[in-house]
Amino acid sequence: MQSLQELLKTHEQDIQAFAPADATELESYRIKYLGAKGIVKQVFGEMKNVPVEQKKDAGQLLNAFKQLAEAKYEAFAHLQSSNKKADKAVDMTLPGTPLPTGTRHPLRMVENQIISIFEKIGFSVATGPEIEDDWHNFTSLNMPEHHPARDMQDTFYVSQNPDWVLRTHTSSVQARIMEQGHLPVRVICPGRVYRNETISARAHCFFHQCEGLYIDKNVSFADLKQTLYYFVTEMFGPDTKVRFRPSYFPFTEPSAEMDISCTVCGGSGCSLCKHTGWVEILGCGMVHPNMLRNFGIDPEVYSGFAFGMGVERITQIKYQVNDLRLYSQNDIRFLKQFQSI
Ligand code: DAH
Image (spheres, rainbow, N blue to C red):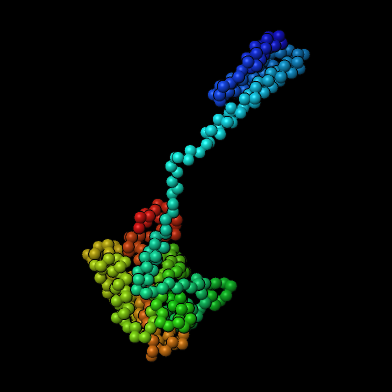
């Protein structure tokens, strides 16, 4: 007990005399007295050598010592905190930390490119709903119920209403525009479409299309060809060749599909063009008279052309993306590659 008292006394004198000048001295004090291996811990360790009958007094002495050591530290704690504040002070002259910014999605970039190419020749943008009714998605487009062409587009139906579908193509927007009855019409209709397809590298249950519609007096197939030729040379470069193949769509007559010369191999044959030198990029045709009649437009007075292209397809050709799933996986390594476009 006595040796403990003596030990504490010398430490107490040191503590009382202690007056730190800065945070470093205060920190050395903290480590020396209050740290995990500090003196306070050590002297408490002496308790085991104190005889039982003196333990109570020894406990009081030790506690008083501990409080003294702590109080001293507290008295100078402002050194610590003021120093911390200085650490946190903002130096307004330093350059800021750059935040990485996001980029547009490649499909959106290509959609914007398509829009601006058509805007230059007087097309404006029109949109329609993704949940569509049977009339706008099929029937008014000359595809009545039981028409075999409906089979080409495996459809998602909306359970709340048997008449509703997730639109299978942006041609539904054509119907909505014609219904408004403002002629002439020159619109481009970008948007998302849905089909009940198993997801793979080549098919997806949703994708994007861009529809075009032009109705006026005296619109001819030559206008259609020239408009689309203008589009591909703007999109893929002036050397791009085009060819039209006869095709069938219920809402156009005649109908065609347009191919462009392969932008990867230039025609010599590669996997993109399946060694044919040509890649298909869109469907098109002259608006079917039945469709005009469905919206009260006289086919003897007005004629028009329409076309529909897949935005994924254009992007695939332009940037050689070989797996459709990449567009919706949100993999930053893929998305970042389009930063500079
Ligand atoms: N709607 C068609 C499809 O999804 C594409 C299409 C073909 C649109 C010919 C048109 C057109 O406007 O004239 O397969």
